[in-house]
Length: 191
Ligand SMILES: CC(C)(COP(=O)(O)OP(=O)(O)OC[C@H]1O[C@@H](n2cnc3c(N)ncnc32)[C@H](O)[C@@H]1OP(=O)(O)O)[C@@H](O)C(=O)NCCC(=O)NCCS
Image (cartoon, rainbow, N blue to C red):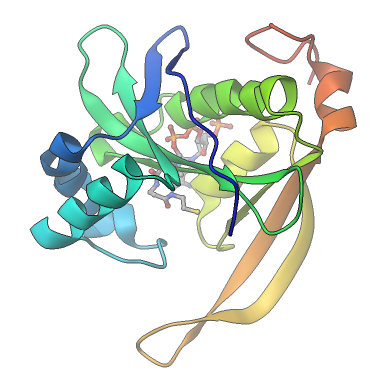
């Protein structure tokens, strides 16, 4: 069983990251029912029941995702994956945004804030992220964060169609994070 860590809302210059609540399900359903958003998500599209279950699971005792809202309007624009991974002091990070809010730097901005949480508050040793090689936007975010591509796994994710997805595996160590970022800062001090 992975440890549960309570999460206090975090604010960036444009975003608020907070725990998901059950009433978030319609906002989650709006973008998680868009095939252009879910094309490279292993869980695929969510119908209303799936979005409700997703919100309920994350509002419970073992949250794995966080709500991402615009700081100004409070609009729910997506969610961040953020949870302990398989080994101690190692967390996984990820990102999903409504198509209308992509390509504005939100995923990178939110991820910077969560890397600060991981390394500065939670004492992580390592943060990892994965995506498919075809998902250029996702691995671009990983590289903008300074994460290293550590692996390219071939045909490792089984699909309901009988196909297999490849996977890129990225990671960032605490020492790499602190080499480019001062505690409490909001952006890398060099790139
Ligand atoms: C992946 C995702 C969260 C990125 O969010 P975002 O807020 O648009 O990301 P950012 O704006 O911070 O950065 C995206 C980078 O990818 C680039 N990019 C975006 N779409 C791209 C595309 N189709 N092809 C190539 N590059 C792309 C952007 O130009 C940007 O790089 P740059 O700053 O060097 O120009 C978003 O595309 C998304 O929600 N996709 C669907 C869900 C998903 O696949 N999540 C990841 C699962 S592993």
